[in-house]
Image (cartoon, rainbow, N blue to C red):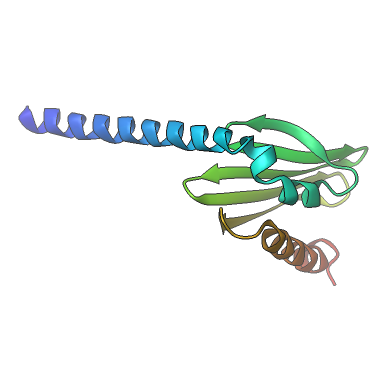
Amino acid sequence: MWFLIIILTIILIVIVKFTSDVKKQNAQILSEGGMQNKYSLLIEYLKADQGKVMSERASSITIGMDNIDGGTRFILIQTFRRLTVQWKVQSAVWGYHQLEWEFDENLSQKSMYDKINTDLRIYQKNKIFGL
């Protein structure tokens, strides 16, 4: 019986700590002006000429564009000193494709974009266009 109480107490402590850390992270992002401000340069690169902010939450933002054939999304997710960027494409012609990157939040946004851009070119050349 005591063993069960100890285990449940530990689980509760972990949940409370995690929730507290998430709230602190969200407050930190908001104090930096939110995701649009914190990652403004990267967002501008990813938006190119046609993209727009589709949604924003305390620790994530979705940039995308839709067309008659489907859509493209870049999802930026802030997690404890890391930024995860997901790229998702749904196209009637090319099908569904997805890639993901993880960066230190302090890495230059230009460097993040350069890595994403390089990987996308390689992926599209090899997987989508089959060259």
